[in-house]
Length: 186
Image (cartoon, one colour):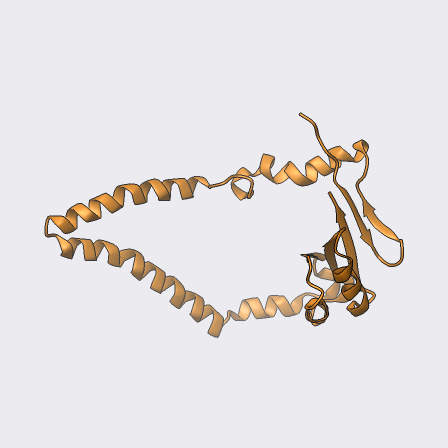
């Protein structure tokens, strides 16, 4: 089994490279970045095609569907309606609860959010992959610039393919100095 090394460079300006993973010494760091979630918390990783609860739900549907058809055929449509009403009622209650919290948010949440200073806020990195999107690049940059988060706590990276100079040029023309343009080499 051969392994290939991913080369990533993020450009802050002309020729300045912020991050680079290029040789085998960095491959263990890269392997940790790529596979740590799959290894340490497989239920949270997208590497697994289906979570356990999803598998149980699919098997359950396989049992419930024939049972529902049997009830319907035997003339017990009233039982079938009652059984199917329960999940619908739960969904309606969940949506009502979400609407309640949207319209009347908790005073505790508002107070706690206002109590945080810019220094206490976490650092966020927003990675935006774009490919052949030169037409929307200015609007995308404008939308990212409109985010109301402290500039020192927000990193915005536009990641383009190596074979997409048109999008890179459009991003470079529209972006503020705080945004970075990266080029992925695979």
